[in-house]
Length: 276
Image (cartoon, rainbow, N blue to C red; front, side, top):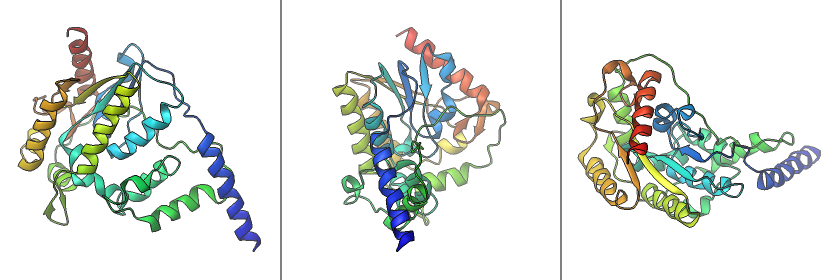
């Protein structure tokens, strides 16, 4: 009985802590969000006043939840969001069900999750979620539950041998080709609506990927991506360099830039914004 009371009390205390906890990030004019593409391609120090809070593998569902939480504390002038082909595949729906990703996603999202909003559309592995919640909240009161704020992170090396693995991860599941994720697209639209409601300028961007990766992206995904790109560029700044060729030495792997590649991409992006 005592252990149950102890663990239960800690979970209740932590629940109140993370529900009232503000997000401790700099009040910068520009926030950069998304998955590992913007995490590794946009260097915030080259902007006038920016912070990159992207995290590897982050789906738009999680981006939407964390932006709602952040905007309770302050409103930036500009949001830069990664928008690439892998962001709209059903691979993102697996983030909350497949053991390869779900534990990490639950660790990040438990203080801000809205699973009732998505559970009718995608599968949520609640068994794993409650295990993660138990580990994060049951043992002692924690002062910090914000696990969803990332940063720019990169190195200078180049290895393009992972193209097949990357393609299979992003566009296939158990050998079957994945389709477009309605949940991902809907939550990207929700992010756009959220920015519009807060008068935040939205900029969408995609870094170059190597041709070894690019040519293997399934047509159904690429066609939808091109269609959405044309749709979103009507009302928002679109800096889409997915198909642009960089020297091999500037790629970290087949779909990410290394630090030197990020310097080139960031400077070109900033120059584009200045000269619009």
